Image (cartoon, rainbow, N blue to C red; front, side, top):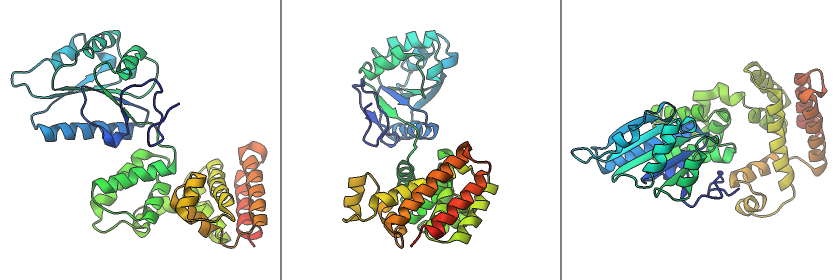
Length: 341
């Protein structure tokens, strides 16, 4: 499947522009697709702000495609007495009625002047005929792709964009700590960004994030992995128990260790600048820098033993053993003590 410039899924059959959420722009038809509600909401709000900045008299209307009344779209799109521009936002397009499908298919063949129709379509197969028509270019539209952000690098880009939009700075360590603390929920991550922007005036650092969200940061799986890999056995066990008490699951805990050890193994013995190695191995430069620091004191034999310990722990926490917590403790002991030389 084709992807956008930021690696998000894109329809291979689309002939209209496919843009990330923060590059939304006015068009007669704007299809906002993808399951990431936070990004979709941001895109629609950003489009409204752009249109309102161009003309404060913008008229905004909302339609529920799942409870659509025949004639509703044409009524809202009809020219008003003073010819104000109109923004029509449509939710639940994946649950559209037959009337909405038929009338919207007809509408996009000749969209009204100074009218911007925004269709929010998370996923599904309902209304495929309408999606195909829009993506083929009927209506002169664009598609804003709001796919789920799964990679940490994408979430870091999101945080960086939040701070850049507010003309504020967040340091690299601060950014990584914030993403680590809220890696499972983009809505919570977005809320945390807004709280930090509202409550602080200086650059946001790792210390700032720890002060506001210390409990979240301390219990992250990556914090446990960092302590173990650095050889701090007691600290790693303490963080592990805190994480488990906060509801952390053993399976993603092992996955966090595996992610870091795999990166270390890729870079062990490699030469070159951070940018060169990042391009070669498909990493971000900061990941290369972090892995280089993590590798201090490790040998190839130690990495081999670490990988074996991870494989055993992974099997144990996925049902191969009776006590997943004990399996984690053994893994941490081996990584922080016996595997390091």
